[in-house]
Length: 387
Image 1 (tube, rainbow, N blue to C red):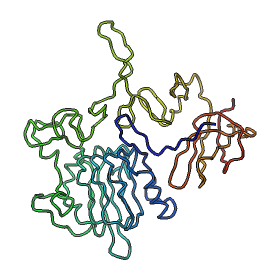
Image 2: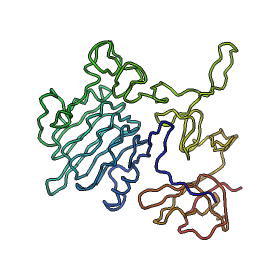
Image 3: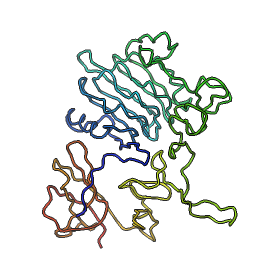
Image 4: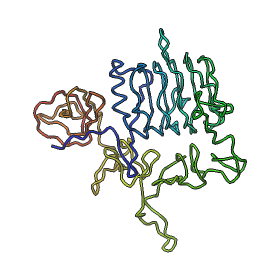
């Protein structure tokens, strides 16, 4: 049998820990303790969240230090219905907003206080957040949150027309005297860092000073420490081994001498906002990108040891569903195979990958290899193509 693989995060060649986000909104996943354990298992040590970062329904005395390394979120950030006083996202520099909460907001902070008692969110702690690439900000009904009105959000959002909705929060607290007008909290190190509205007119994006010589490279996001594409704090489009580029190196390049397209030995694939030489485990190559599944007009094939998406000749093979099996048992789960016409393949089960989500284990079919096994801990219908 194929040994089940526990996947909670992928590492690219530069050592970034990349974690999958969620899209649960304000819904819960069981008890508050279970909710906390799921969040902790998912984001412990994470640096880049591929998807949405949703922190909801967390009590005041629970340790959130596992969030402190997160520096980029590709979707939206939702902080809602929590009782803690501060969230340790001090390393977060950029929210991409590839998906938006309520289709409008890249950052939403909502209802972070209990009905009774004095606990609740008092500081956002986002001192290094300097860019939101898409979407706006809503910070509403946080009874004890004092400093959100003191943030110059127009310096953070890329789109000057992005919605900014700040209301029904706590009384404004004072900034440190060295912060001038804008701050994330009362201390000197909590002054807001401005990287857009203070730039010289010659700058086309962010800057690291007020001089015309202090412009960031056009591919920078969230600011920079110098003018080169390797000086960016984050990348507007793609990170290629530390350099910010508009696109990853393509598979084919044009030879000006032979007037032919030739294979590029330095080609890389797009994995979120990162250029990688190989797609992570359980991702499929589709053109120049790493995707979680092939689109409807393509089918998955394996060539030269690599899983790829190829156009179907005619209708694609019918695969009605790929189901999940949840259990408290460790990854000894196997998924029973059912053909697309509804008939079960006798004594056969599909092998696949196992993903840990707190104390639950989830198995998903990634290949149609049937094997005779002992009865599993749990069975769930999964439609597969009849051989």
